Image 1 (cartoon, protein in one colour):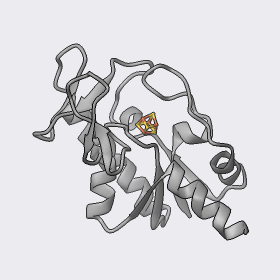
Image 2 (cartoon, protein in one colour):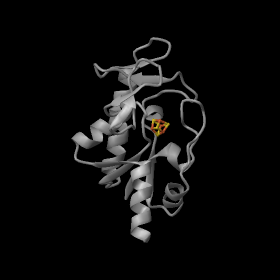
Image 3 (cartoon, helix red, strand yellow):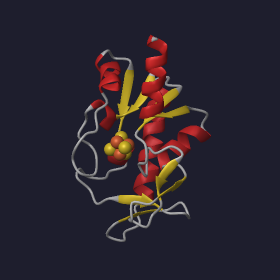
Length: 147
Ligand code: SF4
């Protein structure tokens, strides 16, 4: 079973109240082959919400200057519990998000500047031994499997 960022399966849980569906991943969810989680919503944050970015010191700040790290950590822990309970050993997470981003995230300056790093949830999953792919990596893997 695959763990999947809910917004990639069409759930309108992003900070702007929209989804970011990827058809191939949505199909997995429709077939019951993916478990959907949104760690930010699981952490108690609203939809829509003030944009947040992860800072170099690891904290997550929103554009209003509030430290929202605790909600991000709580949501990541709750999503990890779901991951464990459903037996997922691989996750496909939305790229560049302060929760779900893997390898590349916005740098905390709110200037659309990307830097190396992981979102809070992506980092937790990898520490726990769960394989994490971005949506682009997952779609490539699915296409290779079909070829
Ligand atoms: S926290 Fe993850 S699942 Fe939720 S909207 Fe952001 S990228 Fe999507």
